[in-house]
Image 1 (spheres, one colour):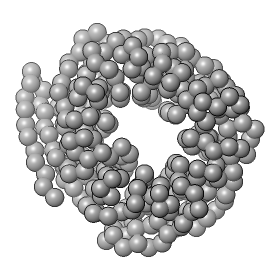
Image 2 (cartoon, rainbow, N blue to C red):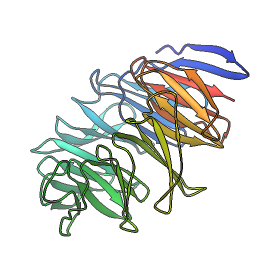
Image 3 (spheres, one colour):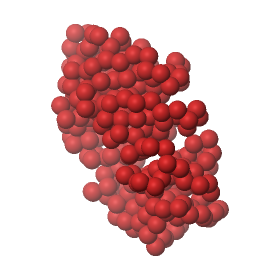
Image 4 (tube, rainbow, N blue to C red):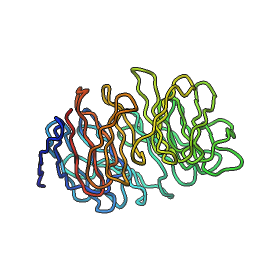
Length: 317
């Protein structure tokens, strides 16, 4: 595996580019500054350390169509959607144990101790880290997404006339959401309908349609939410829109790094950085920037994974 690092300086901003050799990694899992990149089509996986810019481990085959990998430090938990199976793999690549399912895996969650698996049938399984089954239950229907909120499993349904939200073991509810598909802290985001539903307060805040990303800043209590329909970033606090601003290119991902609000535009391969929502620094990046990573404890630098080019771009302000 070859890592190439390129340097560029623009207006005092240092830009580095690292080729990591993994493309189309639409799910990335972070553990203590490490990133797990998964290529579900090439069936490859790399454990990449952000600070050192080094690939720590690389695996050429991890499953048929892997949608999640969880790092236990001495082993990995592999979630293969089409296997369909849940497996535990040693660092050497040896398969230690496997649990097979009769339906495809729709979603998975790992909370550090337990693994939750949702099947297309609506069955929800719970396993420990040794893949011992702890429980199984069924949602009313077949949820499109599964989340864990305050220790409770939550299933959400898309384009459903009867119910859209269901906590496992409770009666499903019709909140009035069209496509609830993102959960960030307490906010459940209706991406197509352009609404956010606060699970803690029960309040709905209407924004604009085609929401692409949501980020919660625990220091300020602010939520940053992007709409692709009007290229606007909304700032929400206490169920109220306290600010909003437009960005130069269609926003697909948002994050907060120190005082910087960082917004990606995947269709245009741009990184947009602002501190006040008025003045922007617009930077080029690789093909299809997908995710923003904080680098250690730095408040003046960040990294961006570019899915279609298999690169990680570093920006130092």
